[in-house]
Amino acid sequence: EEENGRKVFIPSTVDHYFVQVDGGGGGALAKAAEVTRELSKTGPRRILIVLSTSCGLSVKDSLGALTFLNADPKPIQLQEAVGLSANAPSGEPPASFSCVTMEDMVRGLDMDLTNVIIVGKANSPDSYTHIAGRVGRAGRKGSVISLIGYGEEGKIESWRKMLDV
Image 1 (cartoon, rainbow, N blue to C red):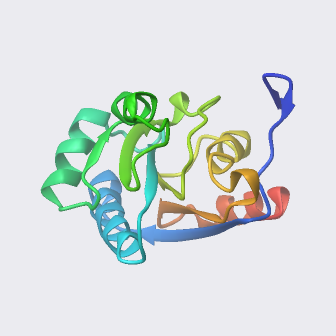
Image 2 (image 1 turned 30 degrees about the vertical axis):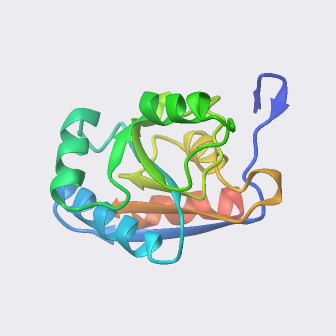
């Protein structure tokens, strides 16, 4: 598929992790907060937390829950993260941030990210490709961590084979 005249693909520098979680959206948010804390122990991180259409969570509620669960760095809305980058004196994004957005808001997003966390199963292999393609740009390493419910591993495994990830 193409986006703005460019072929959309997942860079080979991206690592993929699929983690099964209990408790639906709430359990996945708790795991997402845990993952952000672990990632930030390794240095500055620019994390995009994507709420899949299937998870049933809103950005507003997820921001509140992730803040309560001590996600680190503290999560902000996507618009705030884009604004931080645009308004920074150097034009560079802050060293660390995590922002939360919905799956349908990811296409065309161009940010310098180190990690993507997907809460719930992406809507389709095409959607996963667009989400995963947000990291690993310009030869940089990155990772995509999908937090999925039990029982979804079969579909995810077929996607992994199809997408060669």
